[in-house]
Length: 147
Image 1 (cartoon, rainbow, N blue to C red):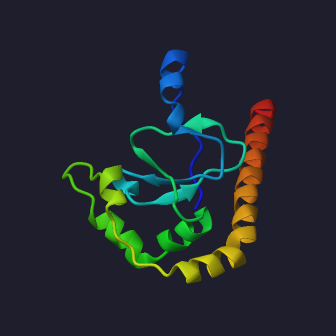
Image 2 (tube, rainbow, N blue to C red):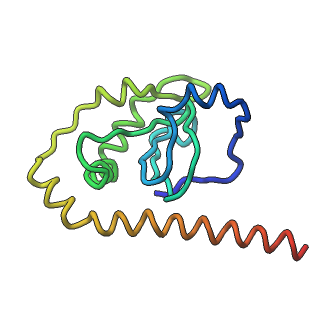
């Protein structure tokens, strides 16, 4: 459920970044790959990450809590349905509109119970992802200094 924060593209044009404000992420968001071999895979953005998603990444705005959305996305049949919606011969892709049209039957009461049980765990996962990224950055800095 993690995302790879290495080799990210950079944009230095502040005017373009201002126009992309609705794609700004700061951590805790759930994102989904919309193209290529990673189509349909999703991850949680670690806390304190500041950046933007591009057209190859879908940003999920849950009507339910993130915890419920994550629980739904973790279901194998849901993942398979999303992947099966991808099209294209060279590099499969899926549009956010297509994902938005995906109908998932859920029980709201069960979602609320799930949220109550797993919300603290979800927060811990996000924090641990942040700590992991922080430690990886420190490791890279130390490796550069040593070698």
